[in-house]
Length: 267
Image (cartoon, one colour):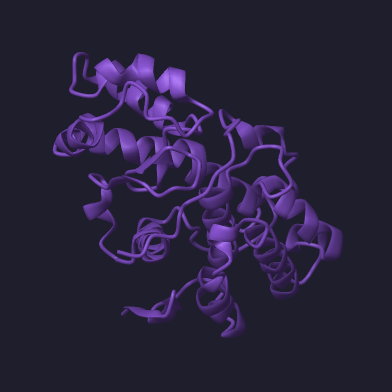
């Protein structure tokens, strides 16, 4: 299985985007369905899964877990929660709050200890097995959904709408925050967006949406190339950029794209 090595720097993510000033009227781009429309959100999940796990069947990824050698410890679940970046700790804590005594709860001290490192101390050998067991529990699957939305999906859609972007632009934001997180480092989502704003105005500031999105994707590719495991930028070049060149700003099916040379289709 090809995996994109979902890479995130240490996440300072609780309400991270709340610090970003919202642009334009609160109802910007509210007329058309946003990425949070259920049908569009399902498309977003499939697009990310094609890049993260080489499949459109994103719901098969709740049980996924491996160390992909990227310095972030274990990567797992539907969005690549990492033991070294804090978001896995937050997820397992939420699961423990909702289902006390669950199979992962005993790993909380170890997850706190390895946060910020690639260490497996206190996790091996049974943590991957227990993660897969937990993934059979609907409570754990819902916790993954909720943390994905709280930390990544909702902030990306909120900022996209504030910038006056339609569904594709909101997705470009979401895919970037999934891979790069929203910390303060130069390759984080907020700084990718900042680079784009230095080159083009978003619709909420009177700019052309297509021009702005090309600037954002240029900044995203730059950020990906700062890290060896991201040197393949096909999730931008032969996916998001294809939709943009086709003028499909609302991600209206049918959609055809490629990631890592594999072809995908949503009818």
